[in-house]
Image (cartoon, rainbow, N blue to C red; front, side, top):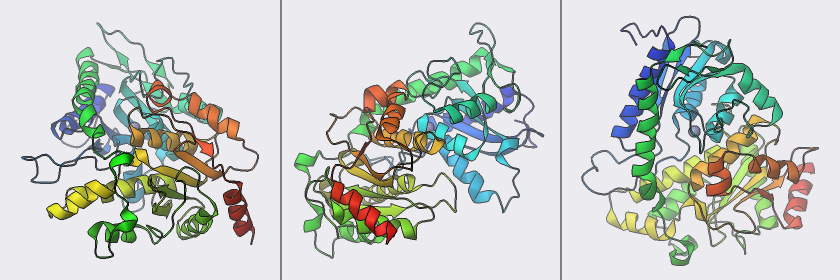
Length: 420
Ligand SMILES: [Zn+2]
């Protein structure tokens, strides 16, 4: 990139994204970077990187809890940045912009980018979690309509020898469509990511007690910092409890409906810990950004709360957080409504769930990802098929398997209250 914030070709655009990936690796998070470029001018609007893991400032000398936000992939942040600044900066519409990224987007980011309508240009492929994991540009993980949109607006830059990869993608839409990168730049974007994944993996996984060792936060006194933090997250925290955390009943109807009413959209998500306590029940913040859905908000809010408490200045609070707040992979997520399985939001939701769970856990029945309602005319089978066609990370590692809640009384209570 030149001093005037302009790029002139694919090589410069990806080099800029790669410099962000390098910054990410220095901060010991996943080494992925990206930027938004105005197609007509080559101007860079913003460049940033992955922030899933983050140390507390000043805590680098001692081990600190670092999982800050499992959804803070570069592309998802770029989408939120755009909508947060669109009016203030009078930004052009997304169809006139391209998100240039060092790595093929995961399911969460692919869904978010397609919801927002950006053009997308990619350097390195990701054969495990990337939405173009097979490299064929046929996106088997996307439903028909988002797939057609991706094929019309996304591109994977060509690479000069010795890689000799041909350009794959739309010839109009992505900025610098059809252009090539040098092999060194592709190698940089690819190897930075692979090295960071190998360094990080164990550390980001070992950050919560298993349910068997966990203590029940409902037993905490009202003076407890953990309890107060949960209460500030959501008025329902620790006030509603399901007897079986994987078989929630009609007790969730009111929290879900009220949280949905208070949110910007028409959806809400309840997060239940292994004791069946509601830790949070939140609606969406779609007025800020269309990808800030109830599922994204709930996932991010709980992760942020844990990050703050696990890194608290007082050792007593850190210990309490460790003992009482488990990793969200051990929790149950109950959506009031599952998004339309033929659309991009459903892909984003399943992808965000995968990023949150992150590694293989013993599959449970019923699933830890549940919903009460489906959009009219959609079936549980369509939701299951969507999950089964996601890239290998989601089907093999995480084994994403969303299901409708088992207790009909919950479905009936929600339906009854919504029609009242
Ligand atoms: Zn992603």
